[in-house]
Length: 193
Image (cartoon, rainbow, N blue to C red; front, top):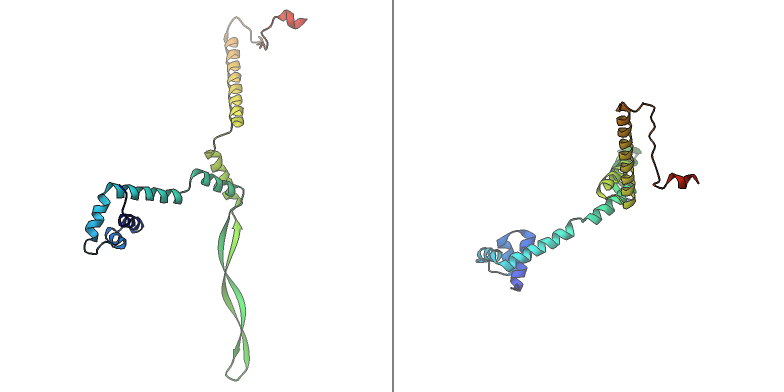
Protein backbone atom coordinates (compact mmCIF):
# COMPACT_ATOMS: atom_id res chain seq x y z
CA UNK A 1 0.00 0.00 0.00
CA UNK A 2 1.33 3.37 -0.99
CA UNK A 3 1.06 6.32 1.39
CA UNK A 4 -1.08 9.33 0.60
CA UNK A 5 0.68 12.71 0.72
CA UNK A 6 -1.05 13.46 4.07
CA UNK A 7 0.04 10.13 5.55
CA UNK A 8 3.62 10.69 4.38
CA UNK A 9 3.61 14.21 5.83
CA UNK A 10 2.18 12.83 9.10
CA UNK A 11 4.89 10.18 9.28
CA UNK A 12 7.66 12.72 8.57
CA UNK A 13 6.28 15.10 11.20
CA UNK A 14 5.97 12.25 13.71
CA UNK A 15 9.61 11.25 13.13
CA UNK A 16 10.68 14.84 13.88
CA UNK A 17 8.52 15.53 16.92
CA UNK A 18 7.25 12.23 18.31
CA UNK A 19 3.94 13.98 19.05
CA UNK A 20 0.94 12.24 17.45
CA UNK A 21 -1.55 15.13 17.64
CA UNK A 22 0.87 17.85 16.48
CA UNK A 23 2.09 15.62 13.65
CA UNK A 24 -1.48 15.06 12.43
CA UNK A 25 -2.24 18.80 12.60
CA UNK A 26 1.04 19.55 10.77
CA UNK A 27 0.04 17.06 8.06
CA UNK A 28 -3.23 18.91 7.49
CA UNK A 29 -5.73 16.87 9.49
CA UNK A 30 -8.49 18.64 11.45
CA UNK A 31 -7.55 19.75 14.97
CA UNK A 32 -10.71 18.06 16.28
CA UNK A 33 -9.80 14.63 14.90
CA UNK A 34 -6.00 14.93 14.82
CA UNK A 35 -5.33 12.75 17.88
CA UNK A 36 -7.61 9.90 16.77
CA UNK A 37 -6.44 9.95 13.14
CA UNK A 38 -2.82 10.14 14.30
CA UNK A 39 -3.25 7.05 16.48
CA UNK A 40 -5.01 5.21 13.65
CA UNK A 41 -2.20 6.16 11.26
CA UNK A 42 0.42 4.70 13.61
CA UNK A 43 -1.43 1.37 13.56
CA UNK A 44 -1.37 1.10 9.74
CA UNK A 45 1.36 -1.32 8.56
CA UNK A 46 2.42 0.84 5.59
CA UNK A 47 2.95 3.89 7.80
CA UNK A 48 4.77 1.82 10.45
CA UNK A 49 7.06 0.42 7.76
CA UNK A 50 7.71 3.88 6.28
CA UNK A 51 8.57 5.29 9.72
CA UNK A 52 10.89 2.36 10.48
CA UNK A 53 12.68 2.75 7.12
CA UNK A 54 13.12 6.51 7.57
CA UNK A 55 14.48 6.09 11.10
CA UNK A 56 16.91 3.44 9.83
CA UNK A 57 18.11 5.84 7.09
CA UNK A 58 18.56 8.63 9.64
CA UNK A 59 20.44 6.32 12.00
CA UNK A 60 22.68 5.11 9.18
CA UNK A 61 23.54 8.69 8.24
CA UNK A 62 24.18 9.74 11.84
CA UNK A 63 26.09 6.72 13.16
CA UNK A 64 29.72 6.25 12.20
CA UNK A 65 30.57 3.06 10.37
CA UNK A 66 33.68 0.96 10.99
CA UNK A 67 35.64 2.48 8.10
CA UNK A 68 34.98 6.01 9.35
CA UNK A 69 36.11 5.06 12.87
CA UNK A 70 39.31 3.44 11.58
CA UNK A 71 40.08 6.49 9.41
CA UNK A 72 39.56 8.84 12.37
CA UNK A 73 41.73 6.72 14.69
CA UNK A 74 44.44 6.65 12.01
CA UNK A 75 44.36 10.46 11.72
CA UNK A 76 44.64 10.75 15.52
CA UNK A 77 47.53 8.28 15.57
CA UNK A 78 49.34 10.30 12.88
CA UNK A 79 48.58 13.49 14.84
CA UNK A 80 46.66 14.98 11.90
CA UNK A 81 43.65 15.85 14.07
CA UNK A 82 43.49 19.06 16.06
CA UNK A 83 41.19 20.51 18.64
CA UNK A 84 40.22 24.04 19.57
CA UNK A 85 41.27 25.36 22.95
CA UNK A 86 39.71 28.51 24.37
CA UNK A 87 41.89 30.73 26.53
CA UNK A 88 40.77 33.81 28.43
CA UNK A 89 43.64 36.29 28.44
CA UNK A 90 43.90 39.50 30.43
CA UNK A 91 45.53 42.14 28.29
CA UNK A 92 46.41 45.54 29.70
CA UNK A 93 44.63 48.49 28.14
CA UNK A 94 45.36 52.14 28.81
CA UNK A 95 42.32 54.36 29.34
CA UNK A 96 42.51 58.13 29.31
CA UNK A 97 40.24 59.69 31.93
CA UNK A 98 39.43 63.38 32.25
CA UNK A 99 39.32 64.67 35.80
CA UNK A 100 37.06 67.38 37.23
CA UNK A 101 39.84 69.95 36.89
CA UNK A 102 40.27 69.17 33.17
CA UNK A 103 43.43 67.18 33.73
CA UNK A 104 43.77 63.89 31.96
CA UNK A 105 44.78 60.74 33.75
CA UNK A 106 45.83 57.42 32.33
CA UNK A 107 44.57 54.30 33.97
CA UNK A 108 45.64 50.77 33.11
CA UNK A 109 42.87 48.19 33.21
CA UNK A 110 42.91 44.52 32.33
CA UNK A 111 40.65 43.65 29.45
CA UNK A 112 39.54 40.04 29.07
CA UNK A 113 40.13 38.72 25.57
CA UNK A 114 38.98 35.29 24.46
CA UNK A 115 41.48 33.59 22.21
CA UNK A 116 40.73 30.34 20.38
CA UNK A 117 43.74 28.35 19.22
CA UNK A 118 44.05 25.09 17.30
CA UNK A 119 46.39 22.53 18.80
CA UNK A 120 47.39 19.09 17.52
CA UNK A 121 46.29 16.14 19.55
CA UNK A 122 48.78 14.99 22.16
CA UNK A 123 51.32 12.21 21.80
CA UNK A 124 49.40 10.33 24.49
CA UNK A 125 46.26 10.48 22.33
CA UNK A 126 48.28 9.18 19.36
CA UNK A 127 49.64 6.29 21.43
CA UNK A 128 46.15 5.36 22.66
CA UNK A 129 44.82 5.52 19.09
CA UNK A 130 47.65 3.27 17.87
CA UNK A 131 46.93 0.80 20.66
CA UNK A 132 43.21 0.73 19.81
CA UNK A 133 43.95 0.34 16.10
CA UNK A 134 46.29 -2.58 16.78
CA UNK A 135 43.48 -4.29 18.66
CA UNK A 136 40.85 -3.52 16.02
CA UNK A 137 42.80 -4.44 12.92
CA UNK A 138 43.44 -8.12 12.33
CA UNK A 139 47.12 -8.95 11.77
CA UNK A 140 48.25 -9.29 8.18
CA UNK A 141 49.28 -12.64 6.68
CA UNK A 142 52.97 -11.75 7.13
CA UNK A 143 52.47 -11.03 10.82
CA UNK A 144 50.42 -14.20 11.22
CA UNK A 145 53.05 -16.36 9.50
CA UNK A 146 55.77 -14.83 11.68
CA UNK A 147 53.73 -15.65 14.79
CA UNK A 148 53.09 -19.17 13.47
CA UNK A 149 56.81 -19.70 12.82
CA UNK A 150 57.62 -18.43 16.29
CA UNK A 151 55.07 -20.80 17.84
CA UNK A 152 56.44 -23.78 15.85
CA UNK A 153 59.99 -22.97 16.98
CA UNK A 154 58.90 -22.75 20.62
CA UNK A 155 57.12 -26.11 20.32
CA UNK A 156 60.18 -27.72 18.69
CA UNK A 157 62.42 -26.36 21.47
CA UNK A 158 60.04 -27.74 24.10
CA UNK A 159 59.95 -31.15 22.36
CA UNK A 160 63.76 -31.28 22.25
CA UNK A 161 64.05 -30.38 25.93
CA UNK A 162 61.54 -33.09 26.78
CA UNK A 163 63.48 -35.65 24.71
CA UNK A 164 66.74 -34.72 26.47
CA UNK A 165 65.05 -35.11 29.85
CA UNK A 166 63.72 -38.56 28.93
CA UNK A 167 67.14 -39.64 27.73
CA UNK A 168 68.83 -38.43 30.90
CA UNK A 169 66.29 -40.21 33.06
CA UNK A 170 66.84 -43.46 31.19
CA UNK A 171 69.33 -45.58 33.21
CA UNK A 172 70.83 -47.12 30.10
CA UNK A 173 72.04 -43.80 28.70
CA UNK A 174 74.68 -41.66 30.40
CA UNK A 175 74.19 -37.95 30.93
CA UNK A 176 76.96 -37.37 28.37
CA UNK A 177 74.79 -38.77 25.58
CA UNK A 178 74.34 -36.60 22.54
CA UNK A 179 71.17 -36.03 20.59
CA UNK A 180 71.73 -35.99 16.86
CA UNK A 181 69.14 -34.34 14.69
CA UNK A 182 69.07 -35.62 11.13
CA UNK A 183 68.23 -32.97 8.58
CA UNK A 184 68.09 -35.22 5.53
CA UNK A 185 66.60 -38.61 4.85
CA UNK A 186 69.11 -39.67 2.21
CA UNK A 187 71.69 -42.47 2.59
CA UNK A 188 74.84 -41.67 4.49
CA UNK A 189 76.86 -43.15 1.64
CA UNK A 190 75.47 -40.45 -0.68
CA UNK A 191 76.50 -37.66 1.67
CA UNK A 192 80.04 -38.97 2.23
CA UNK A 193 80.93 -39.05 -1.49
